[in-house]
View 1 (cartoon, rainbow, N blue to C red):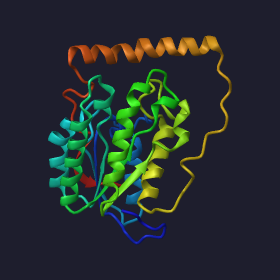
View 2 (cartoon, rainbow, N blue to C red; view 1 turned 120 degrees about the horizontal axis):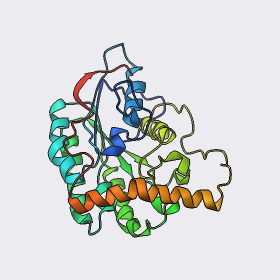
View 3 (tube, rainbow, N blue to C red; view 1 turned 90 degrees about the vertical axis):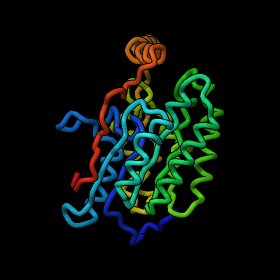
Length: 265
């Protein structure tokens, strides 16, 4: 769904559905110990458009969830909440795993989008960023990511669907938009995704979210090797161990914000 910059379309409620991307991992920490994240930032902007206490927001996202789990655990709840706006992001955790059944991922993502659209609200979808331009060894993921991109863009031709195109945004090649684990966005990354969502919904641009950051100071070879070694030890190792043991970082973790409650940011 496309909106003009001076749209009169307003939203009085929003539900965010997904995994760690939507939970907001690695953004700044809130007083309650949770990450802020792009979805909270979007909710704050939309809440400011109406009367105090009028806008309601829920975030059902849980880190580590696969698309099947998102469909089973979050989509039905999002439908039941009856929000006017729903953001849906998922499938990348599946793609990261060897042997991913991309046909099944697309089928489940499509089913989720259909169920949310049938509830009558506007649905926001996302294309993934391109990891090959910033992360060594990620070329194997590109065919599946490109298929998902085309699939999401196809869904974007439907009424009441807005697609946020992160894949074509070269600014996400910059490691400063990513956290130390290289998988989750930094605070600046979340700030840019929030602005991208708002612009996709026709809100006036506050800044150019695609604009590159100023050039970074050069990183020496030794410093780069040390950073890579730290990344492998602190982040890649534990991730591989969870895959081997069949565990997830989100096991037993409740949704970030399970109820559709007033939100003022």
